[in-house]
Image (cartoon, rainbow, N blue to C red; front, top):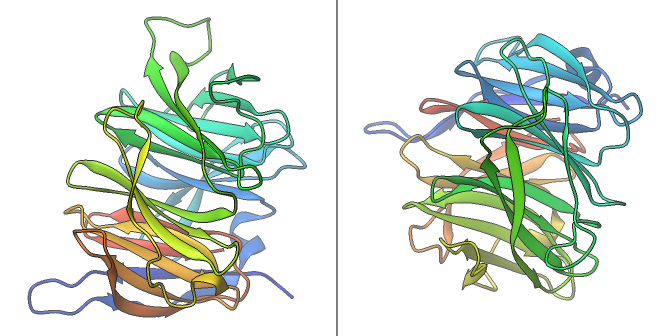
Length: 311
C-alpha cells in the first residue's frame, strides 16, 4: 500500500456563507516529503512551513506551504542527528526555534532556525530527578502562556506530567540559542491520556484530551495562568462521537481566536467541530474524509483560511 497525503483547504463560516472544505488533493506521501517519521509546523519569514524529520538518517527538510498546488515547496535541509522521537517548533523574541526530544533518556535539544533555514548548534536540556524528570514522555507540546513560551510533557504509561518555561537569556555560548528551559510544575495524572489538542481562548490556554482506558473519557482542562499552579479540569465525560475509535486529533484556531478541532479515525474519516465558549461541548461543523491510515494530522493558518494536512 502506498501511503497518501491528503490536503484540504478549510474556509470557516462568514456572514452570508457556510463553512466549506475543498475537495482533497491526494498524492503519494513519498512524492512530497520523501521518507519521514515526525512532522511539525512553524512560520518563517511570514510564511507557514513544515519541518519533516527521519529518525534513521537524522535528516530534516523544510517546506514552504501555500494554499494552491503543489501546496509544499522544498525550502532547505538540515541534520538533526538520529533517533529523535518527537519534534516541536516555537517562536521566542521573534526567533523561530526547533525542539527535539528522545523518550528513552529524556534528552531535549533546542536549535534556533536561521533566515535561510539553517540551524544553530544545539542547547541541551534534561532532568533526571524531581521536579519534572523528562524521560518517558509520550506527548510533548509547546504553547504560549501570558506572553511566555512553555511546553508540557506527559507519560501515558505512568501518568507523570510536567510543564516547563523557556526564557531568553542575556547571552549563550557561541553558536547556541539564547534559551533557558526551567521546570515550573510537576504532577501525576491518570494513565492512558492521548490525542491532546491545545488551544487558546479569551487569553487563556486549554487542551482537550482522550483517555483510552476503561470505558474512555474526554476532558477539557485549563492551563492556569501562573503555570506553577498547573492545570484545572473544566469539563469531563464529554460526549465526543466515536472518541475511542479516533487515532488523531488536531487544533484548528481561527484568526479571531475561535477554537475548532479536527478528529480522524484510522480509515481517514473525521469531523471538524467548533468548541463552545464555555468549554462544555462542541458543535459539528463539517465531515471530512482523508486518506487511509494517516500517521499525522496538522493544520496551518493563512489568515482566515486553513490548510488541513493528513499524512
